[in-house]
Length: 283
Image (cartoon, rainbow, N blue to C red; front, side):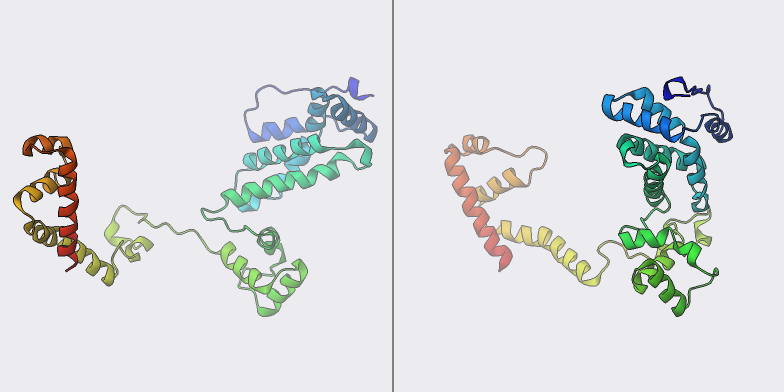
């Protein structure tokens, strides 16, 4: 049977993950010759049908790989979906002339996509960002001998096996077996609940910040009034009309019309008044 005569049934709407898994086993497996022929058609001619057959024949592989990651508490369907993305990437990059079966090549891409998905969604805070942390994240569970904390010898053994530092091993153990804690109370009766948010310092609660804030407020009230008192009536009116009237601040031309002077003269008076106020504020 050649790749052209292969029959790939496409199932109708699937109602559950079990139906999908069953459907993946209906697609025929490819021989090495059929796989090579389809790979060449995709590589040389961009044959979409060849790519489809390569993908469909390996869907059962994705299901099997995804099943191995169910212990992370994420939906099997989501793991399979991410694995399918990895499979499609592998098919796109598959070189039939290397003499390597697609299953061997694709498993790397399938696991890589599933790993990324787990790392993005397993916790609110990402638990693994470096290469060493990723290696520990996906291997530490199987290397631990029991559920208790690891002894110094166990830490050294894991670090040697995975070629990472003992500090990384200790840190990942803490991350894996810790839990996300809600900041807000999780019960309706807040008086009976104790959440971390109750122990967080309020913004600007540090004593020196409070002193600084009070001094600033005093400067804006008492200090401003003292500074304005140093001005002559016309200068004070110009400053108040220009800067202290939030609803309808006056323009230079508005004030020029009131005092029968030029707008430039109003600007000069304003600048001189502001300089005088700064001196009073810093005195």
